[in-house]
Image (cartoon, rainbow, N blue to C red; front, side, top):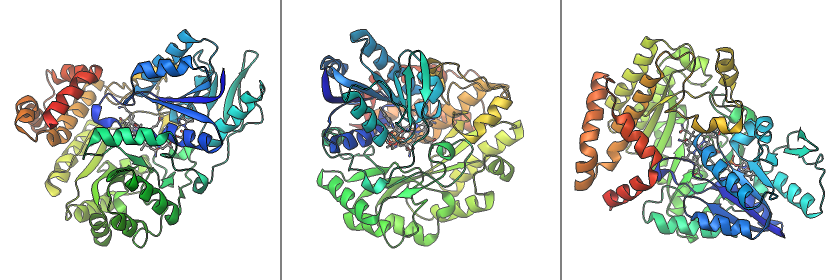
Length: 488
Ligand code: B12
């Protein structure tokens, strides 16, 4: 066995090809291990061939770490875990990430899981590695760890938050190879290089993992650290990047004086998820000047009653003011809306759809995807969903189809209608960005026209697009080729 080697793997996280974003989940953990003298190898299913993964398993590392969110990614992570078990049944499998953190007990019940790391993984994994290197088989002193002993599953107490100021730059060490591969592949459309300038969000949105995962604590990196790290990114050839922060600027009082001028000085193009009520005309101006090329907001609903129910911490008036400000600028913007929440009536849903039209009227060209609500574990509304008869999957494998386009909540009379609206809004408002050249217009043009017709007439009868969508979702590879062809 190669006791100093740790393999960290990231399975495909999305059925959609343009969703290949750098896997900071494993790079953060891996760079921390490297800093402490371990040898780390990564497998990122979006850029590596499965042969690489098999080769890494054959090298007999101390363990294999797997990262996963809830939903789609679980399916692919399970495939990796099964492959390891087949090749080497004694290889320890350590699961981390948002899903194992939120469902630690249930995840640990799976035969494909030996350890679970709950919450931030850097220090917990390091301590586990050190314990295993010493040949220990008792781990009760490692905070944040779930482990198995003599047929019993044990969940240790949670770990305190790390000081993110002490974390190494995730693209140092082997992470650099991953980054360079993303840079190489994406040419001048680098919309998938991730960077964290903070962790956590103080807001209590009922559908979000933050309340439990980050306990609503928002930690920000110092401006000096951000400067050093962004300069490193720039030196590695990155010109455009996305802030993976839970809510960009949420914990930063100094945005106008520090981080935005810094972004301007470094001359980055950047993308971020922001709260709509943060915006003033001055802030918008600073965003534009500092290179922001895309912003997205979770607006969720036009109804104060719903916004209150989901604890969004903003109301219709603030949303309207935000749209007024942002629509004056020229930053491409996405406003996300949510349907299918508990207690939603047909009238409420129709108001949300009409609001999408209103947003596009007031902010021409804005993307307004409409997402059916998914009760994700470890969120405030999850408990509410259980009360309303939602039956969560009883085992890890059961979560794999738990997605916006397949979810069936007990309070929804016609889930197919919600799926159709989701796919329709996606095709109508998001796909128009692909209608840029002759071939894309030939291929996607008619589909887009049909989507716009459906949207206008709210007509979801004979929704054949679902089949195209499912082919698209299940045969991502073919469409990656097609999109590349179209985008040139
Ligand atoms: C980038 C991103 C994506 C990317 C994918 C990630 C990628 N790299 O390719 C894309 C855009 C594809 C994506 C998609 C989705 N996403 Co997303 N995404 C994010 C985002 C913004 C950043 C992820 C990240 O890298 N964070 C930084 C790293 C360092 O944090 P981390 O992942 O938590 O990792 C730490 C720990 O979890 C742990 N850890 C993680 N992995 C491992 C592995 C091991 C072995 C160990 C020991 C520890 C460990 O240690 C890490 C360091 O402390 C997060 C929000 C956030 N700020 O995290 C949402 C988030 C992860 N996404 C979320 C969701 C819900 C989705 C979607 C389902 C949304 C949707 N409606 O479609 C889809 C899933 C795809 C699908 N359609 O099925 C939720 C997940 C909740 C959950 N229960 O899993 C989050 C938390 C957003 C939220 N506020 O709710 N997403």
